[in-house]
Length: 453
Image 1: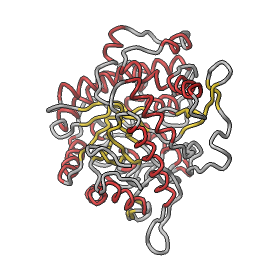
Image 2: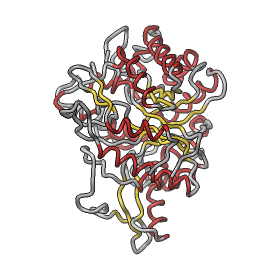
Image 3: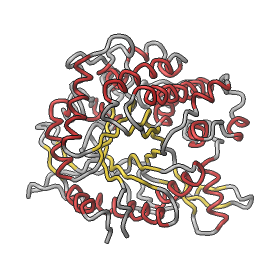
Image 4: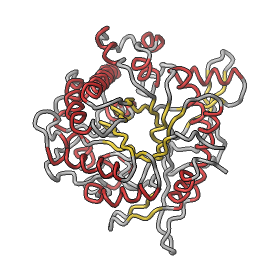
């Protein structure tokens, strides 16, 4: 199996998870600084104060990326490093850091794919309500304008916001991620609408201020139902569940994607959530549906469903089988069929090319006595998922890229440094980087154009 010659092979990381330097060179605090520095919020009270010290070691890290042979690197910007108060005065040192980083990537032959916002909202804006404040749309638009004017002559691939379901679901509804709120469903839906409006303002700012043609998206995620069999009934039941809006949580993919691509909220969600809906205007929907160029999607795992007697999907307990291989985080069962169906169904529904902006495996990797990191399980994970992507492409899905999550071990949010996703091992005591076996496997795969054995 091989991939198209123009396929984008990449790796990814996010600012708060790797940069460190949390209070260096004028950077302001973000909600994740506040959250992780609050006792009891993160595993063993870890925080991102130092993380991988990428802020000081980015040249070394680009050297590893060049050795890996990736064509693209997905990074995010720290909003509060650029605008310490979220709005107002620009921190020149913060912009210069990203200037230098992007120049270094381009010199190494690596295209930067930039995410404007990956969860680390400036604390100053959270103090004004964060995404519950309708003004967030203008705040984000102004921030995107500053970034586009400074970096948009060299960056051509953008994602506005990473994983809205996590921002609102885990951060505003469940309270287990920053900013740690537990709001009503009506308040969460209003914040979600504000987030989508912010995305639209971001798209407008990028279009107006970047140089040359731009490729713009938003990085979505969801929970992937997998049909239990190849029967048309099971497939249609799983598809309907994937795009259905029935649960009072933030994980309904179509609630986020339909307004952006199709210009409307899903009818079933409007009916199901009618008692909780914010005011939705035609002007809002026009803003939210500013055209995007591709779908970015983060996919890790899934769960099996079958069609019930009424055709509605039923979740199969232990659908993968007792003892199915999994990562160290409880939600990461190895289920490559999830990425196949995500590719098929999204490209069919939204008629846009798709890039998998995250996919990865977490484990408790360590340096062995021979000085190497042997992570054969990660290699098997990548092989299975890439095989599934290749099959989806063969079956008509327009998948144009893959970004492994992540380039290096890093701060895994509320799990701290316990779980390792990287293909480069990081010793957090010494900051020594050690490429894992999976690094060399991925390097060789890229070099032979994605040819899987």
